[in-house]
Image (tube, rainbow, N blue to C red; front, side):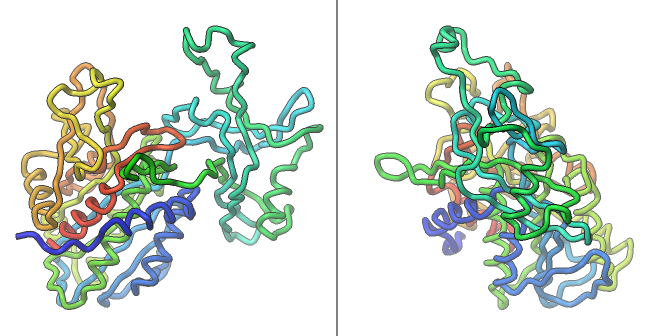
Length: 432
């Protein structure tokens, strides 16, 4: 029996606003937190004592957020229903000594973060965003959301073989953005950032800054059935999870057999090994403290975890019309075909047959179509936070997501219906 859908095309409109408001992982969690606050959630400090009261709560740590809703009548051993995602995207990151340049050009020194499609960052108008750390121990978000930087491509006249032999980019030499003319001056970029943030440059003692494309997301296609935009991998899932959790928490009369949770981690694109990554202790610590705050002990924690299920939601590959041979011949996810179930028997994805049943039940309940993704046997399979979550916490985990094209590009492509179809499936899953 399907339930009435909670989300429609308006959710996709809202996704585009979410992408624009979230040029860095730190902005993404702040944007998600602000939306949860409007839904009645309150922030808990990790250094404070927690109580066992009901209602919506969340924890922020760097570029990660874990939020959960404790319904009336929840016991210490009540299992969790978790939607996991990640806030980071492959991009360029500013180095500790950022001011560089040559031959009359002023440039910014950057490192390559994650598996970036380097060529997609060429000849784009780029802004600058992230967080700065101040001398008093506080952090502040900063976003220069206007054309500031550009990685210029070499003209075809100076590389006559580029269209026949392919573009070859040296990660160190060819990816440093320009941002002006003149002599290089140490401290220039941070003085500029300080002015933008309204602080003294001398008070900035650390930074985590990254360029971002300033072109806004847009509908695309004859019938506007596609959406092009940045950071869909994986803010599309973060946005859907936030919306689903807020919607579930906004139905106080609903009897929830589980505690719904949204966990969005940083650093998935480079292995998840950090204090804010899925391979760190954050999720397990939050879930355990929730159990203990409701008067439970280790036995309750073990019972709760044993009954818990996590949907690891991340983007996957739609069949590419120009490269169909790169895909499995019998599994061709299409845009607007609904969310995908991601399967790999070598456990690069955590899905098994029992997990498939959980996902299928949620989609059926929501009245949402779904598809299956399997990699071509001749191609290496990517991975997600799913196997990490399953192995680290002993939690049954199912890998799902939305099929897209141009994954890891500075600008990716999804179907206009798939974001809200995913959100409806996640809401149905969270309610059990």
